[in-house]
Length: 399
Image (cartoon, rainbow, N blue to C red; front, side, top):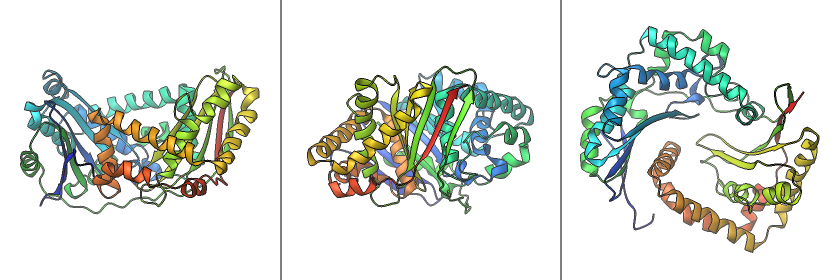
């Protein structure tokens, strides 16, 4: 762990995990995170975690919907939330003098939601519109759809659920899922100008002890291909994807090297080969998804319908060429990744999410070992992972 970083980690008697990175800038970013997300859902309840994330903002036992936003925004702060496969997180950023307020509001959202029946029906409509919005955006659609070709249901389904699951979901279903919210599966993470003992004291005061064992539904891997036609699109949107190690598996960091070489920025192999050299696409990008129980790489390209197979062949060709990767390019990729992490560490939200992800996988301090882990990678590590035998492919084309 880098010496210049002041990081503290403690599990309180009430079961709450507390993470803190001290900074001198008079701002605090704090988050209350529940280790319960889409991965825990059955097929008929897909989307319930995301539904909970929305509903808590509609009112708690202590605050109305407007008071929740007022108390943060009128102090100059911002607040938000997200649902992932493995966690649901409520976070905000405020001037550091409002530390307890920020933690208090996130705690209130996580611990005291009303789940009012009328508000539930209104928010159901909001989420149904969100589902339609993602479906109408070709790039979002294929990036979400590819998961169904990588994993069996329920994991292969979208985090927000489907129109069918959302229309059938009852208040009792929401309450049943929410019963998993317990302090032994919760973490409080703070970054900013504060005191660790004060944060722990707030954590002890605001979070009553509640323990529950929650069962994960471990993803089942598959591979598949799909070409879907749609009349209202002018461009073919395609995704090439394959499984990579999860955060718990060996060689997890080699996936980042491969992503950097193939996809990171205008200097990447695929950008140079597909866009600059051949002019086959405008958008060429890679997205690496890794968490505690899963990992997959996505490569997105927007191109002409008649170029789909050519682009797919170019991707496979560049992956195959990784077997000839040399030490110089590996060293460049390492420096690029370490530099990107250093630049990204300026944003407290990015660091916060990194700490939460690593803590969920076992230990937040792994976040600070990034440079050592990347530097330790050897050519044979990367080449071994680049021996991709199976993959999934999805294209949404004009038609």
